[in-house]
Length: 453
Image: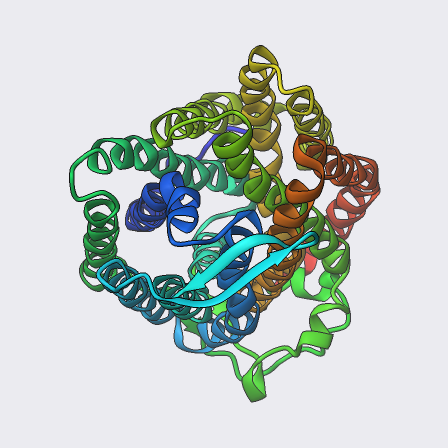
């Protein structure tokens, strides 16, 4: 059983991560506020489930371009500068969103189609699309934050600390919808919640400027040729990371790292299933279940609250006893079941699904992040995390658009497709048993070399 170190270096790392946890919380708090009533706002401005899906896909579409570039930059110039750039982009994006609410609802394009449904693209929707695009192109904050955590955290603690960062993220989704329900109930409608999201992003910018220390590259003159993760293992550092000459590893080079391509495929599939759900369920709640924004907010808050509990004491206890691959296998199985519970449309089953979602995702996702960071090694952490975010962005584009289309055509049966994708993740995850054990053998083989160095 692994116990958490309490030495001086570990305490310093934990203090360095506190601002990172806070930034993560602030990021999801702002989006959690908007998420609750965004589908209602899209409908008010003339859109439908498809437009809602396209709006959701705009952010990852532009993040697909921006994230790998920002990830590689962070390997060269340090994580803090790139996190600051991402946060400033988010701040400006929320300001654009806020300004869109003051524009007249002028129709630009109207569509009445059996395939696409009925919707009108209006001026405020176009401006909101632009704001989400700007947020996406500067949206390397998640991948860079994951790399930052890996920089300052030993491998034995990564699962727990990724769990803590997930807790911080989920706390934003707990408080965000609740805050949206309170602020959105005024005569000002969506304006006050969007203003709150903007002010929260300003606070995040100040925290990075004032409180977040940088993690800087090591200065190493000699570079070993990269052919596998085994060679990377002998160079790993907790305090800093190495920068390769000529701008770092190429995208093709990332796919030559052992087991990283497989992890990126799992990353893609998980985000694909999630984003079909993230588009279909709010539309289902608003149209099929006739929920109000408050009811949807309470539901999302309940899921996030339970997930925060799972990713805290539950994950901490489980990660001491089980390897990451075990938690990924079990978590993906439980998560797949929750999608099936949504299909009948029974309220008791829908509420029961929150338990499956909280436990399944709560133990699976931090374990995926932890295992990916280990396979990446320290040298190319930012580049690999950027590639992972690109995989997530691509999956989000496909999933969000597909989710809107599937719900328009099939209603709650669209959750069957999301569930099937997660069950594919469950089946593929058994390969991680051999992959993680092979990596541990390689690490043990390089340990004497590291000690000699």
